[in-house]
Image (cartoon, rainbow, N blue to C red; front, top):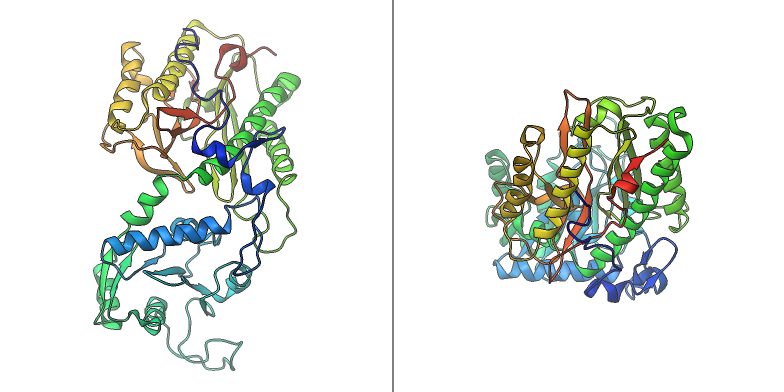
Length: 461
């Protein structure tokens, strides 16, 4: 099978509205506009940085959320999901058992409710209204060493009740309060006891729906991350070609992570202070031989690369300001058997078919059906382990899904992985390319530029 069955949709520069935001290219690839023309937030004096979206974008995101909750008759929404908070505010934080939340009123400034250990993160960011508790669990009396002696602490504060009282102090004690989760009956009763005149409405679909449709700025930042991915994939391939059977998959992984980290942080100012390289992460995975035969392996990989091995450069994941996507390549160290070649060809055809059929107005399940039928027609259905793809967001897997049970209609701005793999556990090999696709006005675009050709993926060492 020729890999030109469908012309790669992605071998172009940034297109459409995203192009206007990334008119400059450098040795890596697309450069988001605010990287070379950073603005200064007039309210705080903070300047835009390359490690996240512009502050003006976050302010506009808050305004969009306020408009949407207003349309549903909500007077505000309390966000507790980490990714919703990061998306709306740009407040990057670590989640633990300590409760944190962002209150967004229908009008006015948002408020963060956070543990005191994060107070320096908050004070250095554009959000200025915040309330802090000392730690979890919080004592009702003598519970904060910063304000009084802590000898003989008593009681335990319900920190969600503490947040609700903060919302009440801001004038919303008798209003319609949205939540980005559906509380358990016991929590719902507790909330009502704290604010008996308020109404609490689960509204998780609002922030999730916003996050599913990427703006041009989000696409531009994702493209930059994907451009780094491509460089890392090229490094992985070159490393194997240079080192051959003297290398292990462990070596590939760690050398690629070092290469990628230096590549990214060469562009991202970082001095160890809060919001310096915030939301930046660089990772790489590699497995060779039988480990490629499992879509979600749980093994530790330190296997010497051998001729005849399938080799997977996977887990290549660069995120900048929380944004990025997937960039994997299913390779094989020659020689390759006819059965292995056929599986690799069919799996590559499936990957290209997902790109071909993905477009605005099409149901996700229709694309999944067309892709999975290719494996059936080839008689390889027993090697299909999973749906072709998932929606791509900051959390990794995000609705909607390219799956036989998902009736969601694709819309412009949605992003998806592109990974309909095939796996032969008995034979000890499997193949799983993955790309990042964005739905456009005219179809879809593959954001990755690393080839999926036999010439690139079949390695002679």
